[in-house]
Image (cartoon, rainbow, N blue to C red; front, side):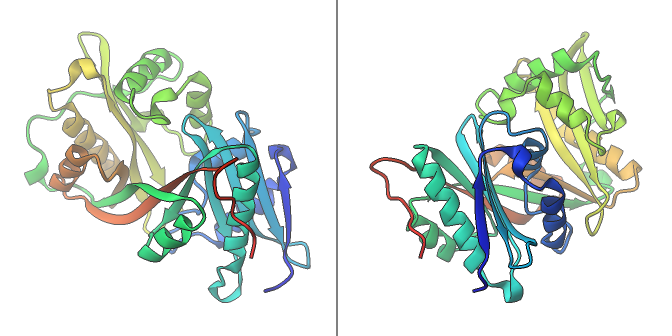
Length: 311
């Protein structure tokens, strides 16, 4: 293996953001999906507010060829690794992972590590490092527009989101809807503002449904212009628990997909936890198919736990 140089830093401002962005573009999946999640990227560019760890790898010419990032959240430290090596050599990827785990073990951390398209081999290899498979996240896709046969019931009445005016009501509804979700259920105004400041944000595609003047639910869409093919995502869909049992989840999903189809998108996409059987069944009934799996591996690292050693 080439003599890559690894550097560890707990300051987001020390990370060469432009070089990381270029690495993500070079290592994107065939459909254009980037290897670093949106949440990690935003935490990097906004300074790693709640705890941050980065491991960068450079080649002998000083080019960034690998990057690992761990950010602290409600469930502990979330870790992701991106690497670029000739011929698909995974040695650098493994070295970045082990170095990150060593550093996090010194912090006595609970770690969540995400792997796309996991296998039995990845389960075994990560198990040897003290990480166990915890849950799967499905990326699901559907052709647009939806056929009339799946649009049961009359269209739901929705309006466009009003940034500023709707923020407090939406945050309250979203956090009640995701009260048991450690990430989605802990949004604050700063988190919402971050998303609203992103280039892709379009309030016209953020659909709100009200009942008797109360925000009962919403479907927030996101358009991915740079993927192949371009895709429209159901980014966040939430229904206030006070309005459960009225079929709003299905109706809002259909409304969001219809809006995306009207914007010219031919493919709809969303993410959902594989263990959320009612949601998976709902999306399958609308024509969604399972496209990709991401698995999170969890481990408690620190004193008394196995500490991975570099080999």
